[in-house]
Image (cartoon, rainbow, N blue to C red; front, side):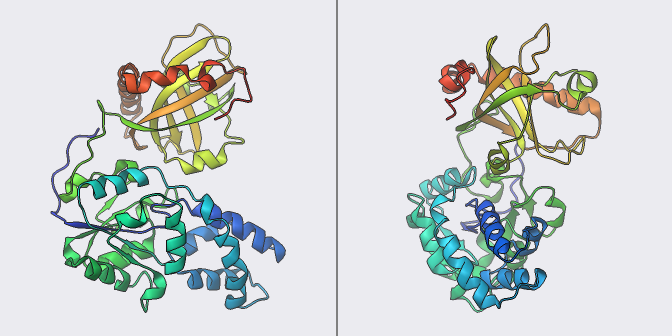
Amino acid sequence: MAAATPLRRLLSCVILDLDGTLLNTDGIVGDVLKVLLGKYGKQWDTKMALQIVGKTPIEAATAIVEDYKLPCTTDEFMSEITPMFSERWCNIRALPGANRLIKHLKGHGVPMALASNSPRESIETKLSYHQGWKESFSAIVGGDEVRMGKSSPEIFLEAAKLLNAEPSNCLVIEDSLPGVGGAKAAGMEVVAVPSYPKQSHLYASADEVVNSLLDLRPEIWGLPPFQDWINGTLPIEPWYIGGPVIKGYGRGSKVLGIPTANLSTEGWSDILSYHPSGVYFGWAGLSTRGVYKMVMSIGWNPYFNNTEKTIEPWLLHDFNDDFYGEELRLAIVGYIRPEANFSSLESLISKIHEDGKISEEALDLPSYATYKDVPYVKNPLQLNDRP
């Protein structure tokens, strides 16, 4: 884990947003809007998502009706879309690190509140699909329980009041710009976890911007630190991805001197969008060669300014030849750090080798070593055994 950062504030409670911060609602919103706009002969533009994130449902609906020039009123649009959302809430996954954070804060007796622009009924429904979440919050405030939603400070001040806490003693964790603005207006400290990639520069008003909840360090706010990091690595719920090895950008061996075994992202877009960019590690199975230790990056590689999110595994073994077209299976079992930019190629190469050394040593630990033998990795030619 990164070197300790000096204490910034001594805070006593945490206020969390729900959609986009704890729950992966963005994909469902996009799917529903594709279907509904299709009925009007319109095509959903994902750029519009940036304009509606953090808004109240009515504000978002109004923006969509106006932007797409739909032949309906906002109320009519809401009456169509609300039931479409309701039947999909059961499929919302907790974002990486969300369960860990809630369990950690609850276990240490840190008072928590939810402050969401969603209506209270919608919040309750979403929470019902995540065991232990509702009872973990001492207070819940919905957008329909205040006069003005975010970016007004009202919802945050109401949450602090219900926690019996001074606003200045509250840490807010938010994914949207309206949420960050409202929390700062309420006089609170704010950690931003941007919902969409390459948007961190817009969150200058936040006190800290982190890549994902996996990177949150409660101790710098005077809250109990996580104790689950092991030798610079964080165990995560394993996830799996695979396919034939393809030719990449040609920079792995030629530019970096580090031969990566690139995978196509086709068919894996949902998984790649769900997991935060960063450096991970685990086990790699090749169909004709065996199982090897692996470290990988997932993201946009800021140094090379990728335009698409990619996955680039580095198998920690010296191979005598290429294996393009061979089936590769990955079991990703741990996390090291968020994606970062570097001032020079030398510093990037040095960091990659450091990541490799950390991974090499960590994978010898029993908690990680056990995944070497999972069938998905050990038998890559059995193409129907996807977890």
